[in-house]
Figure 1 (cartoon, rainbow, N blue to C red):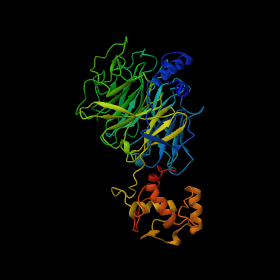
Figure 2: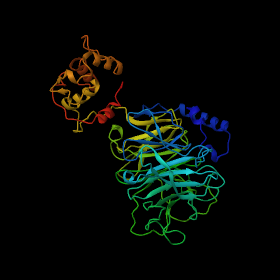
Figure 3: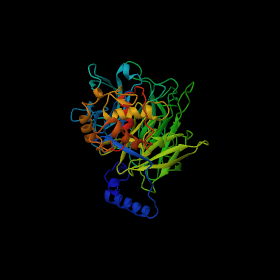
Figure 4: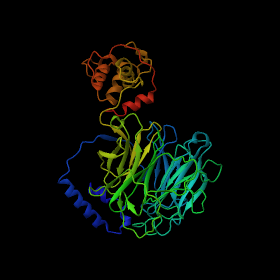
Length: 519
């Protein structure tokens, strides 16, 4: 655990202290915590789905089955279901690329696909540029001939934010809201305690949440209902008072925006913005409080206060247990993790400790968190697929899906519950590699099998850990297959009776089986 804490330096930059001192402090925390901490059984687990990525910092989807992985060094790579080859969608790395990633917090940091991506092929990236480390927001399009390759020559830089003097606190959040606007979460420009006083200063985009309209053929516009700027005209600045927002996300159901903001020395925080839809421009932007406040606590600063009313974070946590750098996550809206299906559950993590939590909002509006998992790696980012399932990245290069420890729901035909005569037979067909119509009224059509009983036996013994269980010389569907299925589903031997199952997509069956052991 201490090695995990000491391996990376993202949060060290503020303090200018030696690694040995930091590691010594963390060791002391771990030793003292061990004296009173009782191990907690993991409430969820994470299932690796892909490995071999170089410093993954964002995960996005384009409204289909693919996941797009952003590597800090400048590449965007694609994970496709059923493939172990991860193709390059866009490569902005290397000497010829525009991305500056030499510092621990610089690089290609964010990706967002336009809501109408299927029609326009337009997407947006957030990166620190060569040679000065300024922040660029750029638009690209997918190539005309290949949906898995971007047109690298289509770049249009929409916005450049100067970031002089320091390399940290670049932010990197880039997401579209339900209003079709692009939201951009920018860090305060770096250094401990916001030494340049950017976060409360309305003349810079550093330390801000921006909201812009990118629907035009080129460039961007400021929405007419954005808060007024210093010139009394709508400004791109929707909110100020952010330190280093690391991962933002929208609730896909109600449009709430969650902002994980990395703290200074004592507190990490999560801010919440309800869907933004004023009829006219407010006179001032929202204010999340930094550097006058860190989390819910006052922070000593010499920076002038903007005097705009501050909005409290919905919750914060302190550093006393070795949790030192928040990684903002998602409100879970999937269907496969039973532990997360009830009430409002926002899943987030700490980059340094690897702990994963779910925060729940009570009826009175207060929030409380519970530990889901203490992961043995640094959680660098979260992502969501087109079905609302949540993924997280290990900073060392593995992409994981959050799954249940209770086992998946085996309602494969989506009828509202498991039934042996429908879901059970569908599962059995998949186990045996049969066609969808192979099991009719409990009988196996020999012509639909994989070349006959001998080939089925080979298939099962190779892939499913020797399902020869009924004592007969060969593996058969109605012998070994049903016994194995009964065992997997923990149902009595009489539960699987003959019946006809409705047709269900093979990928849905595979998705349900992905979470079964030993598969």
